[in-house]
Image 1 (cartoon, one colour):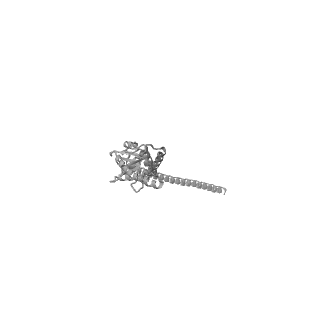
Image 2 (cartoon, one colour; image 1 turned 90 degrees about the vertical axis):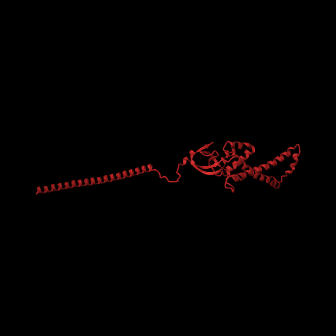
Image 3 (spheres, rainbow, N blue to C red; image 1 turned 180 degrees about the vertical axis):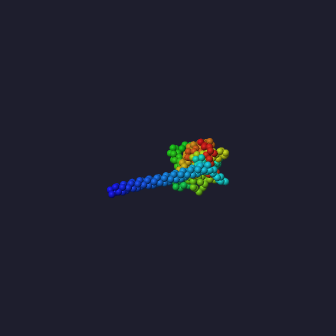
Length: 279
């Protein structure tokens, strides 16, 4: 009995050992299967990523080597760095500018006549007839000379102020006349525009130029130009026109104020290589 009991116990222990061994083998088999599945997914993901990168690379090469289609009558786009955008205009002759100034002179002379003989006599009650006898005298006393000079100076200063206001209102733009032009300039079809930079155009006549930015000069430039112009004409009369003859018919006060008198204004868009800077 004892021997049979020992045999049965040894048999149970062997069965338990075999079962634990089988469990381990089954675990490792499942682990190997899981690792194989993970590796398969990883390989599949890598393959998809590689195919996607290759597809994008070929698309980039195709776009870079593709020749753009030519559209008839289309204006090709050019980089803005090499493109000039401004206005093309013609430089008016000095005789045309003299004519415009003469017309304005006649208009302002009428205004000066009205101021001297109507407004001053009625409002300020200045009597100029008392000076008629001065011209018949051989000698004039100091007090009378100073009095006459001060009254005439007042009239002249008032006239200059009206001239400045007239030019500022006409040249600043958005007036009832041609934009940027007095009455005389409008009648002769010339105007004053902003001119920060001037260029000669290749293949064009010498009096046809390009400039930037163009457009109305505004209140500030118009005021500065009017004051400077009247100072030049009052103290340095021939100088503005002497400098104009050697500088695209551009007077000295126009150079100082960044303006220019032009005619036949047209918008211009071209390559920078077609232009030659002036000055």
